Length: 190
Image (cartoon, rainbow, N blue to C red; front, side, top):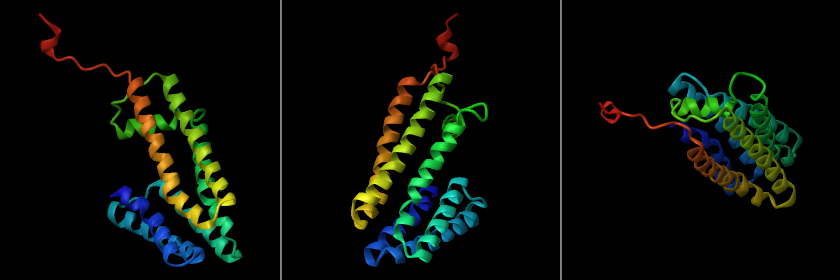
């Protein structure tokens, strides 16, 4: 459910852009993030922090973009969001007992993945690099390619980069996972 809700505004933006123009698509994504938050609140009685940050950026950058009639301002939103994530992940090395990626993965996997501290920090830095590269790729496409290419990149390119990175992360985690198999009483011998 959450994954569908997360993609709702992006899909609305993509579809409306295909049927109309950039200004209408920006207005549509602004409306859709408000709907996304309302549905999340009605369904779960909470709203994910990442969803709130993204919605705030959509509303802020979208509003300024529409008010100034400048689409480039809105195109910066994915870059700013990715670079904010990079900053949060980097900051988590110095704030708190664990890097943020460790907190996220262990919460999702119920602490079943065990890595050495150095590996958690390495993985966290991989995410920092990924967010920096994603943000840079977005702004590179925004300034060097057509608007339609950027819209496709926003949906398919950034999503594709994320999927490829997560597959890489899964392989890396599997190789580094230090969790020992649990032995049953019958395996212990007499």
